[in-house]
Image 1 (spheres, rainbow, N blue to C red):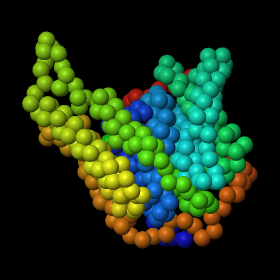
Image 2: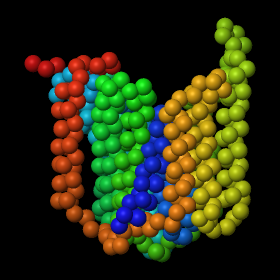
Image 3: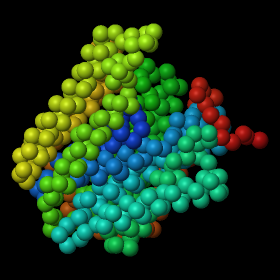
Image 4: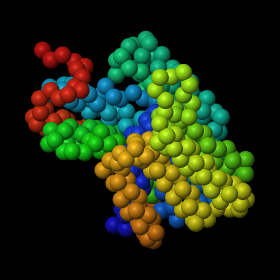
Length: 424
């Protein structure tokens, strides 16, 4: 049993590190890159040859699912935890539990669906996307426009879109008897939700203790670590079909394009990396040579990763094996780490401790992935025990309540505090 937890730890550390790196970029594209990295780690530790064959589709679905939650604004919600009264702190922690849960729900559910697709069991992806889109629109207009249930005023309330899409996905899973993906969606949701709330508590604790470290990054690592571990547990404790069909070449091409071209392109264009190359000559402040070199290096890294991935996967026109998955994982992960160094000023001599820890985590992860630890539990199941899930949720909410009590007793109102409810 302990050996399974080592495999789960490898996935959790991967997700945690990638999610911490995601903090340099933010939004959907940053979360999507992190989701793709975590999915490749899960495929690696699974040691299932049939999953190797569809590694690109698995990474693609995880990237889309985890990336979708990136539209949610949570900066103000984090600030509620910095207030001095129980009501606002508890509200902040619980809303982070909801937001993290939506990340995990969509990411775990779509990944689980891709794992469960087989020759006998198909997914109507067009119908599912249409249902999730409709669910998102309906939920937003009902909860936000009509009922005005605002979580993060005056910021975007896109959480309602993700909630509606997630509920539509759950309904699709239930009525089509996708039991294992449903389990993965639940475990991913409660893990990522707890990770986000607990991460906010760690951030507050670190600031109170005046720890000289990027505590925001600690919070991001927490949601990734707990979300990754819980998703991996959900996957490795479930039964999965062995009748997996090999994806068509066109499917792999589309997945590859999204993972290695579309996502990195938007990460670059939505960060300060590309700006020095396209500034207007009329601007007063011209980019220095160091900024230009950094921008060119970032582009070279992304293009090199794309070409290496293409020649090793799509161009080879073969059924993928573990070596292919491992190489793709290293390429995709290392590119993300290097881009993170560049965007935070490596070429200007700016290096941060948290970035060096990314390297340490990366090395530890590679060591764990090379070991042959079993991933699947001895007695996998497709049992759907709603009573047990409710108990898990209640326990986590109670723990969050205790964390809120501790938080208000170790600090007064902190910098960046937001007030949602004014105490009497």
